[in-house]
Length: 226
Length: 336
Image (cartoon, rainbow over all chains, first blue to last red; front, top):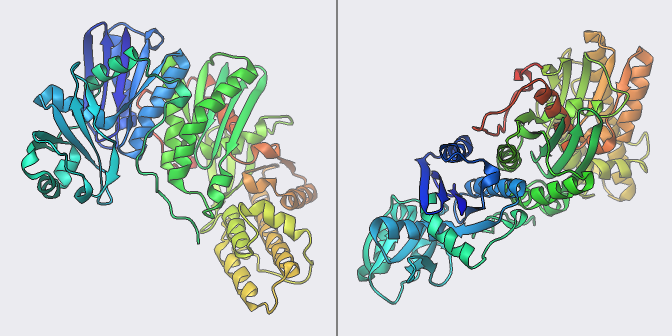
């Protein structure tokens, strides 16, 4: 299995290559430079492995939520590569990726992900790790004011994502003693998408190029004319 | 060489295949005009969201129509235009080229319009004068070579097409304004109203349509009874003023530059009254006029495929580090 993953939903731009158990990755925190970086990064990964794009078996992308332009960059790269090489696409939530990063880096098992959504709101979702070590969404992903992030009934939650940086006080107050810790400077990273993508491939949870689309969560982007 | 052209700079998703041996093989266009009509203008975020849904299916359909599985090069509009919209086409275009390991080139949208008249015979020879007139631009451009363009004059405020849209909104006859006004103007009385031809007494080749729009507004407000006939009379006088102004400046530019060929491009170039008036004017001064087919006057993939093909044939290409440029000067391009 030769799989690439990429995410450009936040200030971080990353991609990873999986070849039968081996993972290589490229990542950079680089706001507004994603178009300059993403293809050279992918090209480096493939060149280092002696691969051409048409030798890939699948591609996974960060479908959102996140920066609208960022989501469309990852989506457009993915649609194009999948169309050109006729391979299946795996759409992965950027919040799921964020939770998976927290599991890998911080050993967090219950994660309240929150990305700064601007306009005084956060994209957020609760994630719990399953027996296979895969982060699964507990409930649904939403966009709301940080004050409206609902408190989970259980304890031992770990808060991650830029939302925890921008709205530390509000979010900490929301969760109080149910929160173990938080880390605002963690971003979705493509290497953490590999286990999520492999899990989705196992269950056949893939789409074809044209159906790989961003999930914005915020859909109310314009006011109708009176 | 088979070149795929991709255009997503505003509210049209356009794709085309240009064969450097056999000409245009096929093209597809998806217009978002209905999506934006309810807002009275283009909503950039909605435009971007629609491009990302429509582009790959449109390319798939085109490949099926042309019975091809791949191409030899890709051209995409890299600017100017709406940044979010441009990025969809640029990212898909550059990434397709990476996946197929073929060259890609970012094309200047207005160069695409400028060269659209060369898609079909009779093909105008360089040098020529071009009037680029659309919802976003009103420019007189001298083209000496492919990529060597000088802007002789341009609108200082509203583009001509923008003025059509705004006046149509005022008259409540719908969006886009160009075709709506042209249709209504046919029923207008010739001598009922007369509007000023803006800037024709200035020696330069610039345009201004904002004052004309205000003049229409003032006239509109001064009417006691507004019925369909008054609307038609205003539409006629407005269209007449815009056409007259464009014709006067084109004639002046041809005479000043001594150029013998005039190319019309951009959405307003599809206006029949403008075409007739420019044809008469060029005939009286011994110049030749060239129009693209009306479907290639508005934004389309064919003009991008063609302009890109010329550059790719000259071994120009874009690195993997690509970008889109919402503002990009036309007189700063590489000469082929």
